[in-house]
Image 1: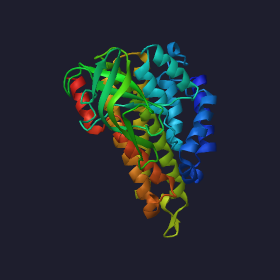
Image 2 (image 1 turned 30 degrees about the vertical axis):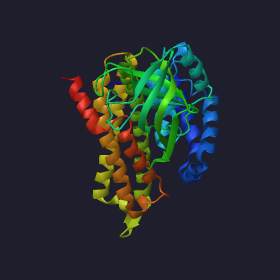
Image 3 (image 1 turned 90 degrees about the vertical axis):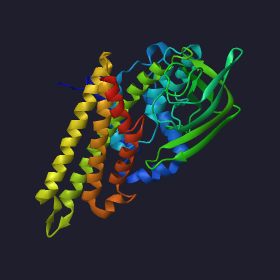
Length: 370
């Protein structure tokens, strides 16, 4: 398979590299993490000026209509520099869920593209990763809906202005029919947001909703397919991020083994170390190839869900193996906050769980290829 970025995609990739080097250098990483929400808001405004925020939004919703390959060009840079800005959650997943969702969605997405509004998807309950495994319920009240229930984990939801909440308008947990999607503002009465930071520095939250007034998105009772399609798009973006992170971890490890002296020689001269680095490089190439195929298939409009499920499993395996090996080859110091390889391992662990862990996607692949 021949794969190469075109000139525009390469320019986009280069702009992310420059931004990452300026804003997220490994030497300044701890300082950037300590800036918290204030630093995130500043960088988010810079990303809006660069046009990245409106890139994944459909042209019909006021965006640039960028596809999976353009998003891949951006997300590889996010992974290499371990940027914690919630690009996938706010700019890839949310717009995909809201596409052609009505006039209110178009108005909000225009604000997403300019950096004025951030929207997070609240889809996961304690029932598991299946989009139909939800118990949150939405009751019609005249021309509006009230949502009651809880969301255990909202990816990058701590700083969101709006939440896209999945809830049942019919059926029981596990049934795809009856799943609907609703918009809820952060300031809504009856909404409780519990914020927390994960091991990789990303800011997530959980939600409790009690009779919260909500705006429907798309057809009532038919949101399961919409959610699956949007999650596929988000997963491919995260695959590209994982590849970028893996490549950066390998590069950092190569620099280390070439300079670290043991028994009077660089440890990179030892055959056993060379074999481990080769294994890491092969895993990177395997993950990159799978991501390229998944992004290309999704961009072509062909059936891609089973391929994406398989890629999610294998790229996660490769990513964690590479990051663990990077930490091991650095020795005990590799686990420290000061060395970037420990941060790559933490991010790979969280990417493994994002939008479904390996067991979930193995089961999904089996179901789709039955």
